[in-house]
Length: 251
Image 1: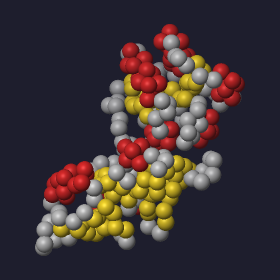
Image 2 (image 1 turned 60 degrees about the vertical axis):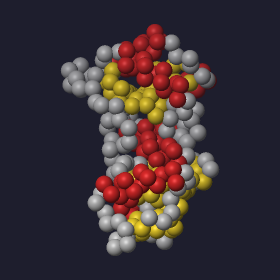
Image 3 (image 1 turned 30 degrees about the vertical axis):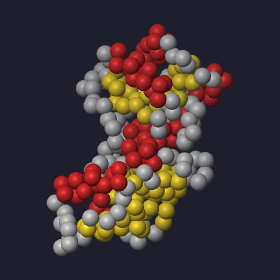
Image 4 (image 1 turned 120 degrees about the horizontal axis):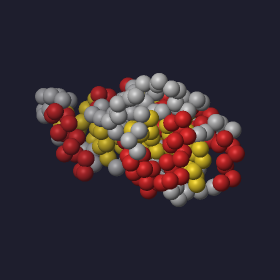
């Protein structure tokens, strides 16, 4: 059984591929994502056998993805642009599917991928569909085209939205990367991280003080939005943290 993911910056495209994957008994859907960096992390963790990969994505193109992941998994490229086919085959891709992808053409690509599996290879049980990554780190895109920075979750203090970018605060520096706060928040493990404002996600174990509508993390004073206030204090109580005048949390 091949463990599969679908990667495309268009959610409709990932939904279609997921539906196709689930129709084939010899495939197991590990997950779908619009974030190629998240997909790259799954591949690097060894959780994927076959990737259905879009070529044109804003954070990381399909061809860049292929160069980074090497031969850790099989890849089927999906795109609306046939001119990229030659580049794809230079990276030993299994097949090249043009959008809109028809099911019969998808099935032929799967058969090609299965033919590449060594005879006698163990049959894997279908894994559960994943959400947030299980590793203790993530990769974010750096300032140059092919530069990626590894950040340990344990080092992240908070994340701030900057329109189409996010600023990730770690001890001694801030890392700015092209990504939305919503997408990054989905990668951060819960319950360790929590959104406290439309523009901020914080690491709960890095909070020094909560005073009214302000959360203090390190030297930063972060606003606690009304929309997130109730869940925030529920989480604090669930962790049996002291609250009120005698403790570090004051509502």
